[in-house]
Length: 372
Image 1 (spheres, one colour):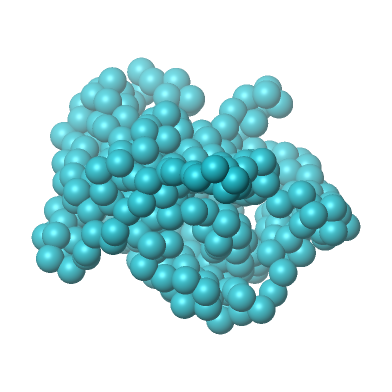
Image 2: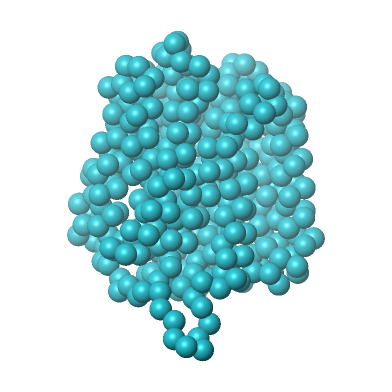
């Protein structure tokens, strides 16, 4: 829930932030959302090593405390420099949070229970994130500073982490003569595939919180509350998709499901490009949410099932880094096109590319499964 909230809860307030920081460039304003992702890319590998070396629980609690303080600092920021500094510290906290949570889930559960819990984890994140997205839109209509106060919820969760979570036993990376090395070529290929898939998915998906509010305001005259409601619908159906995956996760093949999920997301972008009223946008949010809800726990479970216990922190850290690298790259896609703002043609092109990638995963399933 904290991860989803940190990534997207400020998106309904982007137009107000643009008006508040008139001296800042469009890229700097969008960096309020994306700078944490860049920091996570750099900090997640270190967070993974720290979790493997010194334990998951201490790093998790420290990260929660930093999350609450750094995230809420935006309420007091009065210039773009102070705002971005707080967002950078938030990125450090998120690197620790996501890496430790993902690693603990893999430590605590196995088999069908692991798939169910990953689906439940994603669903709770989507539902909580959806609630905070709607709340953020309502708060942004009152004042752009108000959504930053939501980050204080992490300070209330830290005591629960301290009293409710336990630290699992840890092993170290060792091999004996004649034993296969723990870091095998197959494991590296698996990690590379999972990281590439989640990075691409997030580069595509993050266009929704970054660009959709501007498109809806210019084309449909949507308010910040309406923007938050539409993205909230996406979060709701993300949760439903994740709950479905939690029930079928061990009974479906990872690669074709990932392809079908990406194709569904691509189709939603085509709908956004063609939308002339809000009902079509809501339908697109349903499709995008379902596709994302099936894709994310599916790829995470694929990696988790192949992760040795002694390397879980580092592998989950690499997963987190790739996820947020995709989010950081997302706004740069439009800078390459020279527009900086997604037009209907941009949504259409990106939708077709995503559809193509999904189709290739299904077509090349046998070859991919042989490699990983």
